[in-house]
Amino acid sequence: MTVEWSRPEVLEAVRTRLLRPGAVTEGFSGVAVVAEADGMSVVFRWRRDPNTYAIRVGFPAAPESAWTGLPVSSADEWASDVEFLLMEELDTGLVRRSRRTVRDGHVLLDTRDAPDVWPAGYHIGLVPFDDDVPSPDAGFWLAGEGLDVGVPRRLLAEGRLACWLQAYVDNDRGEPFVGQAAASWEDERHTGARLDVVHVRPGVPSQVRRALARMAVCEVAEAGGLSVVTTIDAPELRELGFRPTDDGVLTLRTRSGAVIPE
Image (cartoon, rainbow, N blue to C red; front, side):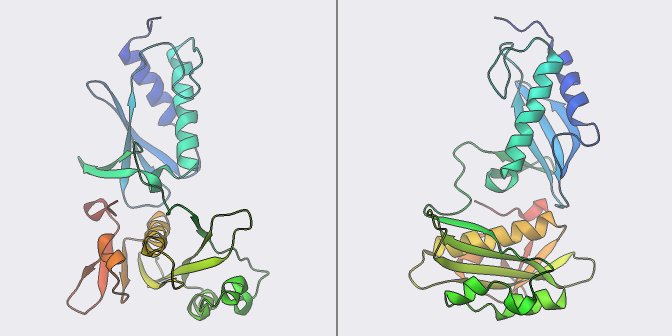
C-alpha cells in the first residue's frame, strides 16, 4: 500500500506531536524537527544535559506504525506512534546506549550496532538510599563485599554526592557486588563535578570499571554538569575522553565538543 499523506503533512504532524510542551516523556524537550532528503531529524534536549541531541526518523514508506508495525490511517496517527516509539527508546536509555556523532552543533544518536551500556555478565545501577537510611549505613552491602564506601558515605553526609553507582554480576540473585563509582559536586550550582571513586574488585574485567566511569559521567551530565575532573589516572578514563591539565588532574567537558566516545 502506498502512503496517501504528503511529506509536508507528515513533517507537520510530527512537529505538532513532538514540539509541544510535555511531549514524549519526562526530561524530553523538543527543539526542532528538520526535513532531510530521506527522512527527518528530531532535535531535542534531554533532562539538564548541556548537549543538544538528534535522532533520525525515516518518512513512512507504507501506512504502518513506526512503533508497532500495525496499519495507521493518518499522518497524525503515524506521528503519534513516533512519539510513543521515542518515549520507549528514551525511557530505556537511548541517550546512553547510542553511538554518538557530533554534527551541526548537536549530537546525533544512532542505536544501530551500538555496544551495550555495560559489559556482558554485569549490571550497573544507582546505589539506592533515601532520607530514612543514615549515611553511615548507606551501601552496607557493598561494604560487606569488601568495597570501601567511606568516600561516598562522607559525600552523602555532606550533601555533595552527585551520584553513587554499583556494579554486580547479572544473575538471578544480583550479586556479588563487584565495583562502585562515586562523583561529587564541586560547586553550589552543580556545574562542575569530581569523579572521586572508580573501583572494581580483583579479577573483574577493566571494561566494568570503564562502564562505571562512563555511567557516572552520564549521571553528572544529565544533572546539568558541564565538566568532570578526577585525579584517578586510569587508562579507561582516557579512553572516555578525560585529558590531563597543567595542574595534574584529568578533565572531561560534557558539552558536545567533547562527547564521550564509544
